[in-house]
Length: 55
Image 1 (cartoon, rainbow, N blue to C red):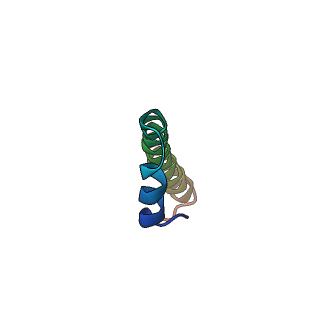
Image 2 (image 1 turned 180 degrees about the vertical axis):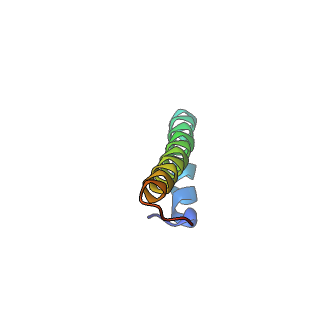
Image 3 (image 1 turned 60 degrees about the vertical axis):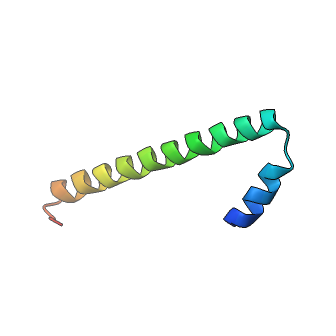
């Protein structure tokens, strides 16, 4: 990954329109990652439940 400091420096040299686009992309990516993690966790719990394994 990219460190927050490097990302901040990169964003500062971008035109405002690019900053808005990149910012929206980052937010969307974080949201999608969170949704994927939740989905994997649910599927894992369902699979373990089907196998008779409890947390």
